[in-house]
Length: 316
Image (tube, rainbow, N blue to C red; front, side, top):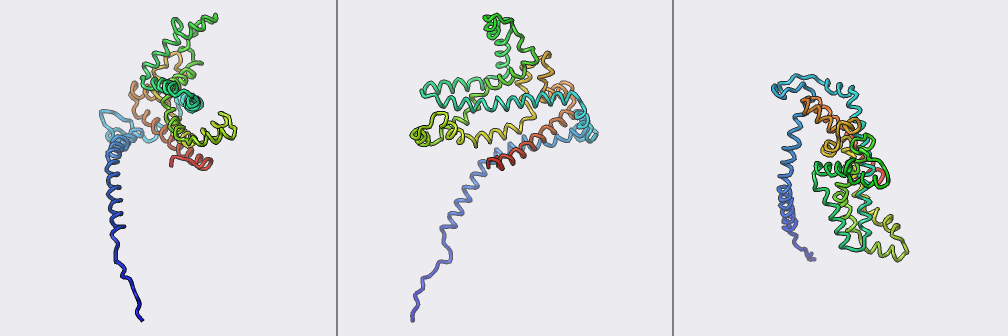
């Protein structure tokens, strides 16, 4: 009885060829990524060596290695300093206002701008909202000082029409934080909303058509279609914002503050500038920056874990 057998090839070249193509593609991608990794390593990881000056009495004349080792002296000093805790309090308050109003403003702006039916008018609004982002904080602070001037400011002129006496807005401690947060919103609301515009543009229009056929109002469509589609981006940006809650932008506060509002406007960034660069206490400011960065990192990791447990979304 004869048994027919088909010869089996010992190796097929197709999988091998695919594997080689895959390796070549992967190598090309890594090669493309290499300059970015190199720049990141040179400008972000090598300078970490300078952290050790927070444990030393650093002197530019002796250098990092030649400066005497003092351990946790500078950490103990600023943790026992009442001025530091007042500065930290100001930082957290302004950061909370930025989070409550500055973070939600781009979301609301994107939702409202999306409801504009006339496409040309919508593009004009979006373009106008982007423009303040490209102005430096020096220019923005000058605009606000001019607008809020008690002599010829536009705001005080309008108040004068109603018989209200001029208000020295920029010298009122109770008004500074509100002005700083409003300036941040005015400058960056349009730019921050770009990512939300991109998310909204990617939503399937058939979902809105189906909702309209079911009789859903515009509010219902926003609540049940638009906002759920924006949740991943909102969570991502919120986590990134939380990591910087212990620091407030130096440029904004420094250009808006003045000696009359220093008690409520002095934040960690301006405090570090004043005692680090002006008073040349390099080791102390490095210690403050190290603790600030560690707290931000811990907060980011914790918020990411909580987010993944609650909504199933995170940075990684």
